[in-house]
Image (cartoon, rainbow, N blue to C red; front, top):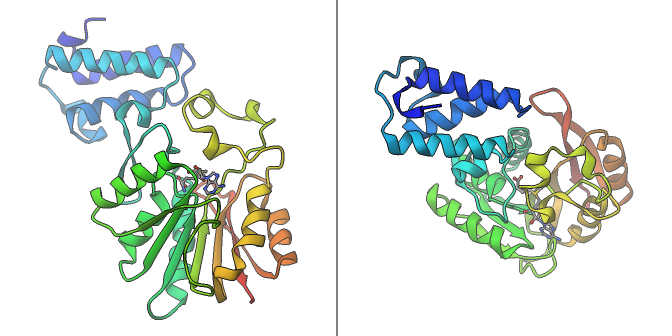
Length: 287
Ligand SMILES: C[S@@+](CC[C@H](N)C(=O)[O-])C[C@H]1O[C@@H](n2cnc3c(N)ncnc32)[C@H](O)[C@@H]1O
């Protein structure tokens, strides 16, 4: 295909067909997002874009489509992802933030709004910083802390907080071990922990298995390990009445709410994602 001489619409059509023929998921979205980001226009503007692409841009688009054909996710090709109002840069240590996690932020913001005064929020396993930075941006009066075990993730999360003009305090910690915060000081705890058991790799698309960091995905032999640890290890940090919002995998809701209940948390229910699947478990610490 001679990418240079084709209109933007034709380029996208051809790329979509090629991706579809290769069995790449969401071929049109991939082709359109890559071209619109390349040209700095909205997806809806592609059809009206008349200027021919320069040779350089055409070559870059072709290279990006080749990478997508190898099942590299669009966000890895671009080097950034959009999440709520944020543009978040990525490195190989950070999970691509998912649209489903936006509903976890909604639940955390509702929890924030139930409390008065100066609030302390803690995000465990922050990755790109998506949840913590979104909360800091949308509720600037909160003091937001975030942990991760990965130095590489913390580096990009720190960069993203600055890039988006927010203040988040990042800490290297194993869950909360190594975190220097006073006892009974956290009002809202939020986390999207790893929740795929290590023998469940067949459930994952190549985009995830090959391109997301294993530390972000896998919880070891027990898919609930991180929830168990959160329920056991975080109570000393939580204020009496602290709200807890945890992203959960499919069909994990009941077990996680029961686990929390057994550790002294009051189960409040779940919150669905955009597809209507329970995506966050909601609990309250009754210290
Ligand atoms: C599913 S990702 C979530 C990333 C981000 N919060 C999001 O929603 O996009 C889980 C994150 O937990 C981090 N993590 C894994 N084990 C951890 C541990 N023991 N303590 C703290 N963070 C951990 C991973 O490095 C990864 O960034």
